[in-house]
Amino acid sequence: MARHDIAVTGIGLVTPAGIGTAPSWAAVCQGQPTTARDPLLRECPVRISSRVPGFDPETFIDGRKALRMDRFVQFALVATYEAIADAGLDVETWDGARVGVVLGCAVGGPETVETQHRTMLLEGALRVSPLLLPMQLPNMLAAQVAIESGARGPNLVVATACASGASAIGLARDLLALDRCDVALAGGSEAMITPLIMSGFAQMGALSRREDDPASASRPFDVDRDGFVAGEGSGVLVLERAADARSRGAVVRARLVGYGASADAHHITAPHPQGAGIDMALRAALADADAGPADVQHVNAHGTSTPRNDIAEAKTIRRHLTDCALVTSTKGSTGHLLGAAGAVEAAFTVLSIEEGLVPPTANLARLDPAVEVPVAEVLTRRSIDLALSNSFGFGGQNAVLAFAAA
Image 1 (cartoon, one colour):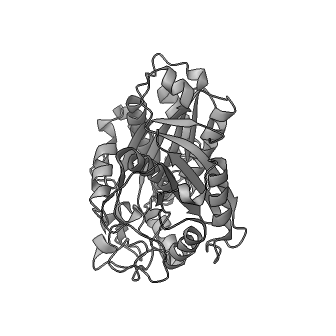
Image 2 (cartoon, one colour):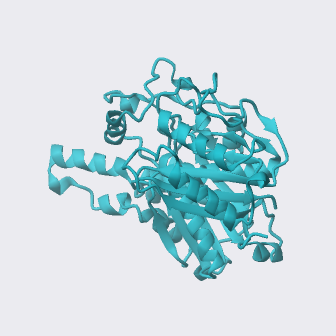
Image 3 (cartoon, helix red, strand yellow):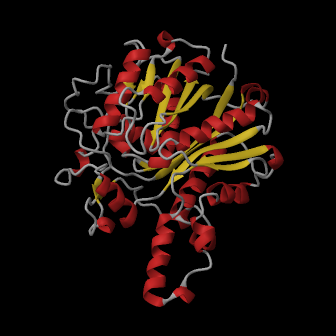
């Protein structure tokens, strides 16, 4: 029996694979890539990305409000609206004082910063918008969700680079276990596909340079992978204590039964070559779930499509789990959603458990021989009682979530 039994009662997604949970999940299950040439990056060293298709914020958010929000906040609000509705909750009748918001992002609103910086250089400081800070500050992610939903409980934004979304879900789980709130809106959001940020990633050598065939650029665990593809979007889960969810008749989609976090304490960008920090987080998540290696049937891997990360993660999975754990990386379809990745992939893990499906790793043509774990190459049906969702970030920050069947 896990120490903590937290129910997932709602899911909301905005991803490069679609706006909404159903289209996002369908595209990922089909192994559909989303990477394309990006005209907004035409002056950058790398000119491809995975963007949310056809996103018009004013379709979902009142026009005046939408104009006062950066894209990363807009994504989160749309995902939150869907998650709340999916959970069967009503913001007009819930006790907002007992509703917490814990969301993750790596940067905040760089699009707003770059736009206003250009304005200052071209038109002078007096032309800079007074909304610059309210739009770009990372805390506005959780603040705006609270304002729109009336959630007056603990309100936090977590920044652990590309582990941010998973870290936020883990922290929300802890707040529920400590009775700090009864409902938690947890996840992550990111919109940092801007010329400055992408040029920085490119200069680091982190991005795929496969511009001649963008659709195949994100290829986790493939022998020819050459870097990640930046994506954007948001994922939000509604979490409640399982007993509370059942008492109100909610549909429990899966249970969050374990969380492990650690730091490599090794390097500002490179993972520990032996995956030491990943080891700690994975073991902690299993111990928290009161589970052993043989209990895990599926891993939604961090799997960024970078040479070092994929090998370090595969080595850790190989050391700690049996061959019964089928691995996938949905980043082959969505690209790398950075601070939102862990939240979106946690949602996909819940859907895998609920529907008994492991999505394929898109663009996996030839498995790297150094990846000595079973990786899903096609959509695979299997019963899943326990699954892990791995997320790791620059600075060596690691988070592993363990989900169990309802």
